[in-house]
Length: 637
Ligand SMILES: C[S@@+](CC[C@H](N)C(=O)[O-])C[C@H]1O[C@@H](n2cnc3c(N)ncnc32)[C@H](O)[C@@H]1O
Image (cartoon, rainbow, N blue to C red):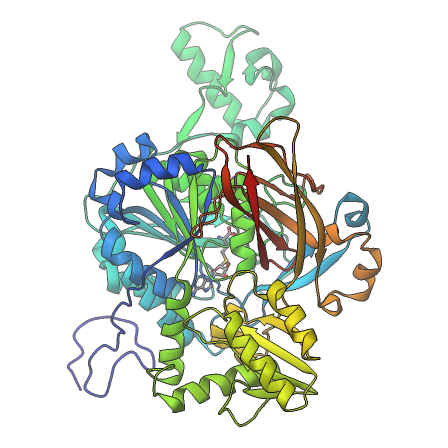
């Protein structure tokens, strides 16, 4: 046992038997850009010449990149531990301000209520309740603490020398988190303990009702950036709101008041003027009435039910709160990050304040909500949506089932299959062929973590099912070869086999979700679009023709009854008119928001500059946050 010579927080599993700190070395995986938003193919081609790899751009000066529009902000879908590790290579010491608001709940899941359809349905409150994210310390505070410790160490690496971290927390874990920050950043680098009084009604009877969160701020070094915030002083204004006229209080309106604030101010102005006050003299001019903001924020309320910014994402924080932090700790053009971004409050605020940003979350509702929120910002600069693709899955399978999953590591491969079959509710069978399990009367084939399910692979499975006298095949996959279902349905029919393909969701990799059995395998949706000539030469219009969710039983009866059209199942759709087998770059999109529930089913006309053969990719995100896409081949004369 090593000698204890400093104050620190210890939890089971922090040290090994020899007293060494147990930390996993950072894992660095390559990113995959899945979507480029607000960017045209032409600008992309220009930029690629300037920036050959994803993060090379950071070799230059960041302020000039931001002002030249070179740095693309990034929304990353994945576990932040892997994302932080993977960013370390290119962004160490580059991020100016990091805000995190990790889930610190009481054991319950955080639910999101998803609206279905347009105004006519929403009026009748058609909502589907889905899990947005899970409490990560359901198994005890120590699980939360060790989760956060690992992330904070990586965050420390990414912060610029003059950068600052702000951790949003409440009474449940503030003491523990403060100690983690002391240990990682050094207690000398403590900057602030901000009290955010959110003004929420509470009916506690045996204690004072809780009415604040804490934001713990630490810097990386002594020379961090801070700009004092001057705040309109609302105390006077609120007190005398009835006599405020043109944002001012005149002496005449309050001369009979015995309020101490008024008497004091009247005396002060009288001394300044050197004469008795007249009715027209101004006591308070709220256009100039400021005070320096202190560490108690009492003027920012929790997001109210009718607030414009409300997105119904659980635990969504107000933009005003983040705005104040960004105003104090950053400058225009700085890089800001939030690795538990939820509905994207930090990213949207940073975008509006002309800061570049990086956001990360593991929930598909979080990523989808954030994507729409950013798109809805007027003049939002181009940004990218990334993930760690099959690298994240391979890493997960290696950690969970051992090395070499698809080589001769037979044992780990079988463990992987058994794990997925169990979550799917199927029983393992002899795995010498392509069939891995059986569920009711259906045979089950499971795709590899490392590569998309191929047409050839399914053909083999269909043949095997047919030779065994089976009639049904379920294929579970992480990714799919393009056009797979359309190609295979007829082949399966010719062998008298009913083919269904199910998406393996990323929740499979979340320990809590798998443990609680909260993993839904959605059947791949059916999408049909038509591309027709427009009015002018080389002009085309794309319309959505049909969209089928194969598992309507996942939607509660009362909601399903109100659904009038296939359109109601769609939340967002977009078209890339010139898909080049790499990143999806939508040139047209439409989506539902709280304020506008309508969805167009026809794009505006797209004019091709040159004749040629093009691929048009249509992407739909349904109400469950699942993506479907289809490619159409188009000859332009
Ligand atoms: C309290 S919410 C953040 C809310 C956010 N501040 C807002 O204003 O919308 C916490 C978020 O952390 C995400 N999260 C939890 N564990 C994560 C992990 N390991 N990696 C990435 N995101 C995670 C959850 O999905 C959830 O969206």
